[in-house]
Image 1 (tube, rainbow, N blue to C red):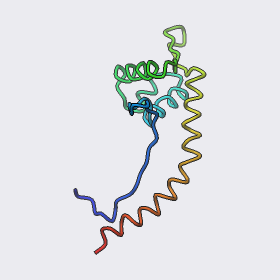
Image 2: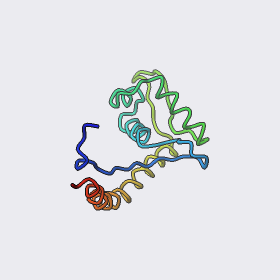
Image 3: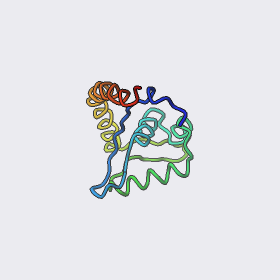
Length: 125
């Protein structure tokens, strides 16, 4: 490990998982859903995030299956081309993650800065 122990930092993430500990939806897919909301297109959202189309599409379908809820509506063609939009439940899920981070991130940042000081003390000579 090339990092100096004094440069270590503490980080955190949130995700939704089953009672068995199987991850369903985390930060990456939340950001993807937000990008779909902004761009109105799965293709554009994927390009902005650098994801592969096929794998992302499969992952979204798996999430919907696990949650038993449709998160996106996709339409093809037409004069303006296809579009992808969030369903009302998809919108609520994005809003939930936004709220979760807005409410908890300041607290965790403050606490992690304190804990980071303790972590660095472990490596002091």
